[in-house]
Image (cartoon, rainbow, N blue to C red; front, side, top):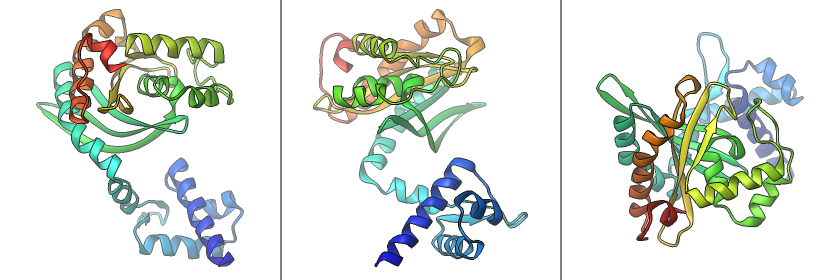
Length: 260
């Protein structure tokens, strides 16, 4: 039993390493995890057998395989969010001619699970799995703002890394920022995680008012301005509300207050 648990731990360590680093060689994986090459090779072989890891035949390097995404999409909540949100996400991308994203909150992080982008006249919907800290992106901040107070305080009390000069890494400033987001019903980001990436995010809620996801639209920071926010906000809130209605939201009154 103990040996089985150790094997599971090694497999998870390999998967998490590849998720963080991308393609890696057997030697790199072995060295990074301080795992004997024979053990690393045995774990990788088993993961390849079940398509959790794939191998680049040109250079023999390893990367995550398709089975992991398939497994994630079989999770009922993730699949339902993706399926119900995609039409609105695509319409939003067409209206604004911008990249749009759908994300879910996960213990201090925000996980982007889908995006829609225009290629010529076509709007392409793409499943993704990109994780980032919640406190420094538009979709992340709006998702964090509508968490229970105890969860918000847990995040605020952790080490907040300054990724750029615009990152809000001071707990008091961030607390004030989140309070403002709850009042407004949307969040903005001006280069807080990556210097060149800006955007606006809005919450998606279900029939009980519980946050389900966040939807956002992004632009290059050269294009970011008050005018961008003003033009993006109405269709963004409309898309967030449409997805919320699909999850049973039936609120009335002012749009932003209802979604908040």
